Length: 211
Ligand SMILES: NC(=O)c1ccc[n+]([C@@H]2O[C@H](COP(=O)([O-])OP(=O)(O)OC[C@H]3O[C@@H](n4cnc5c(N)ncnc54)[C@H](OP(=O)(O)O)[C@@H]3O)[C@@H](O)[C@H]2O)c1
Image (cartoon, helix red, strand yellow):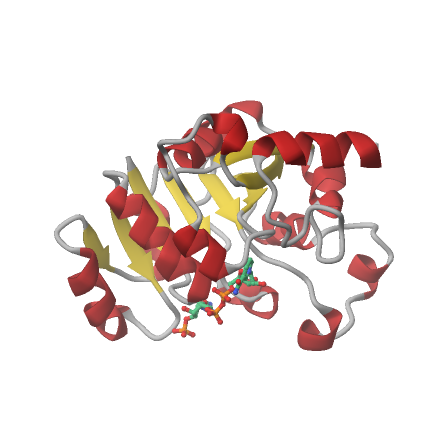
């Protein structure tokens, strides 16, 4: 599969490593330009290239966006129709400043991104796992229920299924928390599943207890 990765920091670079290792092609972008990503793509090998944001968007069967919430507005607003997009972003008021509509729960950070990239088939995912765990805790040899859970939320079931397959390919188990709004709220910082080292079987119990 072809995966565009936008954001090459703690999460984006480690996700790109896992995607390439699982046999995918990756085109990765940051804000400072492809030339600044040469060391990373050299490490990633022949199946990775450094590109612009627009090129990463156009390249991906799936586009993995992993940039700070405060920089969403810098992304292009066009060209996202029918693109499956994974959004890893989180809202931390101390870091991002208070945003009233997020504080009230009337919308979520992923819905804010979707408003900016209309037409995308957006799946919130990978936001509950610390980058060091993402780098190290995948294990494709384990049965799915014993693998570390990566939570996903979204309104497009086919997009979620494609993202779930990708998550399984890199050694994790996808656990669906529901639609983008309510599922997204349940994946936010401070929730029972956020940054918890849960297998898929444990995650199911935690989610049932919280329901
Ligand atoms: N760190 C974690 O463990 C973790 C875990 C789960 C979720 N998250 C969430 O995932 C997102 C990324 O976190 P991170 O820790 O990976 O951040 P990070 O290490 O600070 O990296 C951010 C990346 O985003 C890029 N970027 C910023 N603005 C951009 C733009 N307009 N276009 C393209 N690329 C842009 C930066 O590129 P430049 O350096 O060129 O500006 C950088 O590569 C955040 O929303 C965070 O809350 C983080």
